[in-house]
Amino acid sequence: MSEPEFVRKADPEEVFAALSDDTRVAILRALWDAEGDTLPFSALREAVGIRDSGQFNYHLGKLVGQFVTQTDDGYKLTRAGIQINGAIEAGAYTMEASLEPIELDSPCPTCDSDRTLYYEDDTVRVECASCTASARFGVPPSVLAGHDRDTIPSVAGRYMRSTFERITDGFCSFCDGAVDPTVGPMDEFIEAPEELPDDVSAEFLEQIQHLPFVQYDCEQCGATPSGNLRAVFLSHPAVVSFHYDRGIDVRDLSIWDVAGFDPASETICQREPFRASATYTVDDDSLTLVVDDHLDVVEIERDRNA
Image (cartoon, rainbow, N blue to C red; front, side):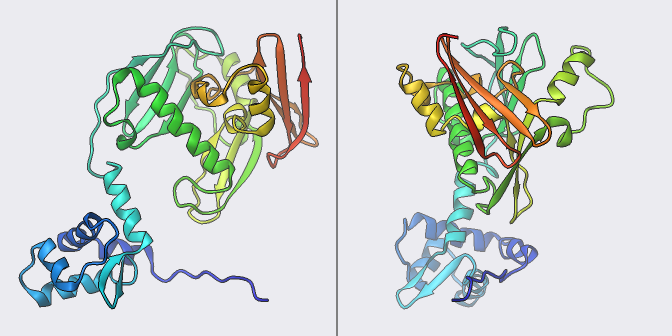
């Protein structure tokens, strides 16, 4: 039996060119508003508001195949057409967000100081007031729109957690293509700046640069989403059960408490063969996952009443 074959049927430039006209975007929006129903040619043209049938048919023809499918009953969106509308609804191209900094309730896991959440350029950034421990993550405006200010950290955290789960399941957060994880010292993936900020010591940078770092390489689009071990493994069965046995639902944990790089909880155990560990602690009990450079868990250590 032959292997499934997938070939690119259009160049990216052709795809973007097909969306370069206002009439074509209006057609996609009209089909989106139809909520899955198939629209006959006349009904679709009326919804778009184009009188010239020939002109309308020309623009519609540029969308059929890639973004619109034609049936005996009319026209409806393809999955690509739905995704284009989803991106528009997400606000990535149409919304501009303004959010004053928000102080988090939980302290920095690295130094126990206060932390602040910022939202700029569709990116959530959490920074510590005393050390350089931080976390940043892309969040579309639609995720936060309509939520009270006090709930923003929780909402952004849930979105970040769900994205991590999708990536760890093997799907790119940008294009849905297959991703391949690699674990190694951070300095193998991120080059240290030539000049350090005034509040960053060379000793601290050295410590951070040698922490374990997870990078996923997408085979489809080339994106390299990344994160730290404790955030990546928050939904691992051993981690879930460890917390559940102690009366904690991991879904109620703040992702911001595990998303930063913490030398006390994540470490490189050895280089050859590569081993790194992530430790979760509840009161005096701890759970440690040991992984190899492919992010496979090779050992689980439990320490009660440490």
